[in-house]
Amino acid sequence: MDRPNQSRYVVKSLVHAAEVLGAFRSEGEVLRLRDVVSRTGYNKVMCFRLLYTLHFCGFLDKVGENQYRMISHMRPNRRYRIGFAGHGQDSSFSREVTSSLVRAAELAGVELVVVDNRYDAKIALRNADQLVREQVDLAIEFQADEAVAPAVAGKLMEANISMIAIDIPHPGATYFGANNYEAGLIGGRHLGRWANRHWEGEVDEIIMVEISRAGSIPQSRIRGMLAGINEMLRRMDQTRIVHVDGDGQFKTTLECIRKHLRTSKSKRTLVGAATDPSALGALRAFEEAGRASDCAVVGQNGEPDGREGLREPRTRFIGSVAYFPEKYGPGVIRLALDILARKPTPPAVFIKHQLITPENVDHVYPNDTLLGVTRGAGIPR
Image (cartoon, rainbow, N blue to C red; front, top):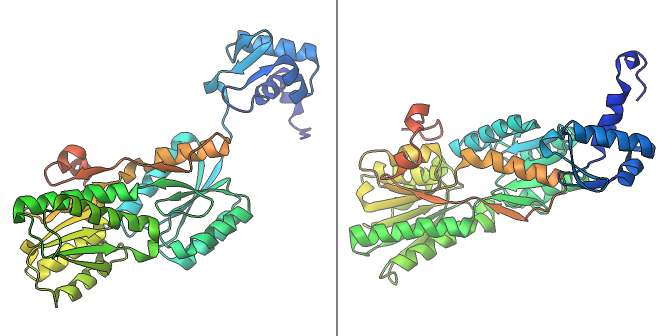
């Protein structure tokens, strides 16, 4: 680009050197002298002298006769624009994921364009259009409605925008998040072991609190919980299994379990919930009915609201399978940069899960008290 007002300040030799460095398109790429000549358009003598000087100054490694490789930390990163369509701010899990992504993007020198899906399919579609208008290089989608996922993905693919889907798969997207069936197994086995220890394996009823709109993949955590319970319990033939749709939310689950308890007289009930807000909503319903001792509840996510629930004295919220949302950011941004650099990437990246209980929550999250973790606005007392 011609810049006549600035040309007198430009050091042309540095411009030439920058062009040579720019010829290296990825970390580890080895270029011969003739490759640099071809990519820069400079003559052979100039390229040789520039390569020799850049090697002398420590910008390039010499790996063979007239072959060079850029020292990785010297390569300037392009400032990518990455879009993030967040799940919403009603749950502490979503807030943790968003905060983690913002921090990781800042550290990576990435511009993060954040929009809020507000747990609403129509808004998710509008946000996909906005990210296209923003001309982002890559989009990170975190929205829970499987039915709208193809439409969201279609808008982004039509604009040739690569995509990462957090926790809810989207067509054509690289998946990042839960290993749902494995996470379900961990929670179900814990429920089963608890029932064996406290109720001698006698369970009247099992309630599975689902998120129907999230689709089949997140639903596998429910199948995993049932399989885990079945592994541990000695007798399940006469146990009633009830499925309710809590939509992953505290208030919706509270209403569903309130209604269920009006007709159920079960004295020993295991509750496996797809999220911590649903787990806490179910427990609240049992508490309101004066039947907290009739249940044992396990959630999923290990989010701040859930961890605070685990710290309640004599709680029947006996565990949550942690997904560590506060650590999503570095992994997602690293994956995004690999995709943008056209490096080989797996179709799915799964996080590691861990069971958190009232006994180990302070060990796994020792800084919660220092950070002032308390129940969020979505989990009223």
